[in-house]
Image (cartoon, rainbow, N blue to C red; front, side, top):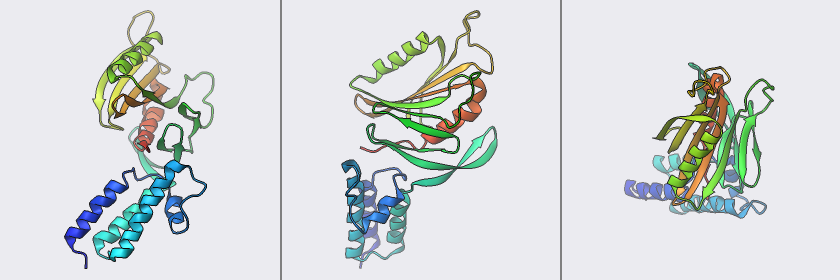
Length: 249
């Protein structure tokens, strides 16, 4: 019979083996009992294979304690193709339906609020845009995700600042943040040509960068573009979606 110490050891192993966010896909779990994704890209097979090992381990060792059952349920919960997320917009709480999106070329996943947004993907860039066009009177609104590899962090940050200056933006804030992700955040506002200060207006362009470090000289750069009146709307929703961002090497 397996004791509490065994339970703890197994739980630690499970957490190490399934080192992914509670995201990837429910369908993965459903296919484990059959076969291991013959049509799936190779990079996702390891997820199913490791989970199958876990299942077999539970069967072999007869783990039937409450701890073991809780871990099994936790594994099932990892693979969710869609879920609900509570967001607070301008002080009002609302529940939105979000769906899992994967980018195979950039190796990441993110949950997208597909009621209001969609993800356009290319080999080098993934861009989350509004589902319906906002109209010509509105500045651009999108969140763009790309990789920056082979350069030190300091050089990439200087490059971001140079781009902001070229786009006539004033750097308002630069800091290390832990929410919505752990990253270096750089926030810029549109410059007023007359006052040489931040332009004041509902349509003032806002650019926010998150530089997320994966490993030495391997980064994800997330660029958010919106306007001042949309900071508490699109800006907040982008950050809520970004909370689910996860690298899936």
